[in-house]
Image (cartoon, rainbow over all chains, first blue to last red):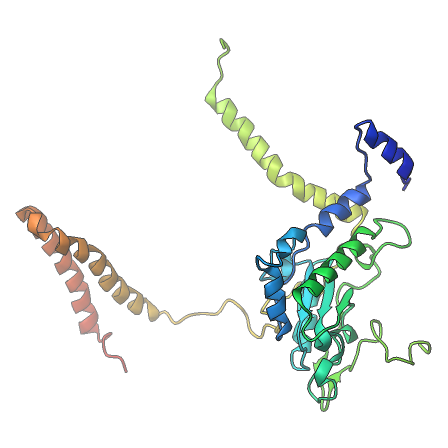
Length: 207
Length: 125
């Protein structure tokens, strides 16, 4: 795709001619209408609700339309502790979302297990099963942190190529749209993590 | 404005425009999917959405046909209340004919209740 030179674009804009590329237009539309899935797991969801209310006003980013069905959602905010009992449902919901889809892991629990990391029943980070785009630390993160994650996600969406070798996952026919849903095993979830998404620290170089 | 337009022509134009308005996004989406974004259906994505849980049974279950009796009984009392309330409010100003008509109406509903009673529907065991 021939890219328009920034200088030429600037010069034309001074003359009152606005030109853009299909990619820019597409990403501009996408990043300003990210619809999250209405889905909260624990106390971080309270902060997520606060972020969508009038004071913090998620609507400024075009993301106030929380959808009650994954069929209409673009973004999954994993807000809170993911217990091992809940993990298969979270992965299945992610699988049921249409492409392109994004995940924000909100809070210490969702990114790593948080204060329950040593517990027997809490998943140590949802990124073991599904690809997470933005991680937010904090316990719980304030709504401002969620807004910052939104802006980070918008930057990421804006930079995604429509074609070429660097195009994102949802543009590739060979990349999966669904990720295996873990099953309840005797002691733990089976498999304990999805190898194509996550591998234990230190073992990353081996596989 | 001397030209004469037939109103049917406008309906026809609107019909075509409405059809195009509905079909164009679908066509654009299909072209977009063919050019850039490949479709990726899968067993999970095509599955019935049940709040993330696996759906366990067929969604189209049969209800017992005896439930129609409850529906009829509900209708008897529901319709009765809807009409009795304005009847009671306007009772002082009603003519004899209107009162008689209302009486017939109430008797019809009472007949339905009596029928259900005789059939043993009111026995909640």
